[in-house]
Image (cartoon, rainbow, N blue to C red; front, side, top):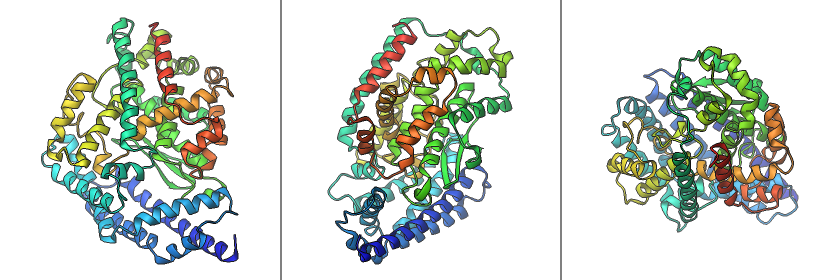
Length: 505
């Protein structure tokens, strides 16, 4: 870089670090909001977070940033890390300068208010009184998208800002193929007569001591290479992971589900997110916007890789089932390994996304993708969302939800303004199947899982993916590591092969 370019870059980096720090402060407030804040603290917390959002927006829209970016335009003699920061800021600045500070503050306030009202609405199953808050938030987010659309549709704009890497037409095509694969497997398993019965899996729904559950989950996290001195574990209604500092990546879980494995898979899922963030927050990336997961989609690919491809594998449970039985001997007395494996991989069309089995989970995402596309594009009114949800559920999952709580009000994403995020979960399954296929050429994954040496998987992923944070777009990163563009067929092969073997189809 020339002297002028170096000076511009250093100033951009300094600002980036300042904004990352403010973002971490905002994350602390958000984590507190979800975990331990008083019931009456929501309105004031919304104002606090709105103020921070407004402050971040003000710093991000300074004209000096445009000057720095102009100076850095076309720079070639820079490291990949430097080029990435310039790329990220060009995209971010191009967006934020078109969004009024007032709108940023209004969205933050409406988002926090909507989430706060959702807690009560979800508990009471009351969508009608909650509806105006959601309508207001959706309208504000649509207004924001319209300002930065650049000729795209509103929903495609939201997808792009969530870094899915795909537009709605591409996702629709991928999800049509995914739906066929899923329904083929579901029908084959349901027709096989080889699933466990309710009586055979009843041991999963017995009373399990919470401390014993924590002990077992922490054992798995430890084997995964989870850094406990860089994290904490909270308990919430809707689990999440929050990076509130480069060395403070917090995960949450819940113990309210009747199935004991729900908590196990929840904490492994969130642990996967955290391990990715821990790997990304290293060296010069720590404290910058590059010191995080590359995208929502890649993030979900990693959490679901750990949750499903690792922790639902028979090889994983060859090691952990004896430990589980020793931890909770009374509840697992007489339970055979084959019965346990079929129980934790039972295919069941049910209401709750976060409790869904590995196969039907994608149907829950397809449902949400199709509905949010409709209400963002305007063909579905928010007040009609509960009925549309029930109809789509009947079509994809074979049943209407048992209640509002297990239907349209079950997820926090829409209540927090996260439109265009849901596709990341299912797209993540396509990515992790691709990664798993090529990782298997370098590691004996079955043997690693049998030995409980899960840290070897973490070390592999950290060395090839995690340590680069957000430097490379996911498509480029996959090509760098695997030598191939993303191939959706690996998901189809993985899912069909696993359940063919598990249920002797």
